[in-house]
Amino acid sequence: MTKLSFGSHPYLLGFDQLERLVERTAKTGSDSYPPYNIEQSAPDVFRITLAVAGFADADLAISMEDRALVIRGRQEDEGEGRVFLHRGIAARAFQRSFVLAEGVEVAGAALENGLLHIELKRAQPEPVVRSIPIRRE
Image 1 (cartoon, rainbow, N blue to C red):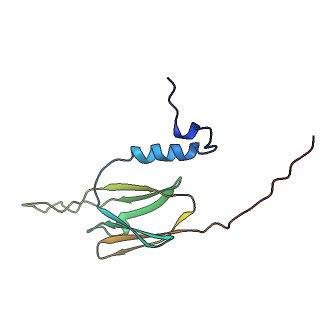
Image 2: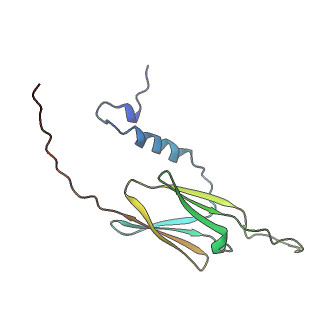
Image 3: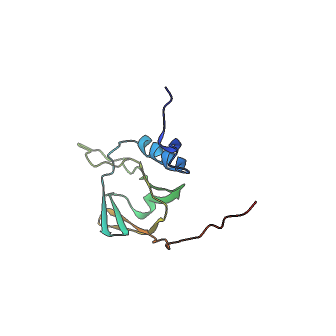
């Protein structure tokens, strides 16, 4: 029996990219560090907030990679010469990715009180109605 995938359904022409997007999203790890929130402040405005206590601006990098918003954090190890009796504050490197829909763009980012806020905005496409002429052959 042949497996019918989402992108190969006869009524969904050109949606093979969506199927690859779903597969790529499913493959992302379920790592919970750093914790994050996603808020919707308006119909087309979103905010991702990551708890990055202890990270400075220089320790963080935000990039877009093929419709994926990628946030990386890496701290320099300043533990040399220090003796910890208990080390419960995580200072490990991380990478967190969010796949953005077509038309969603990063509007800006700010680091405030140990929270990294990334503002996202969806551009409203112009409604297009186009008539298709029929050729005679």
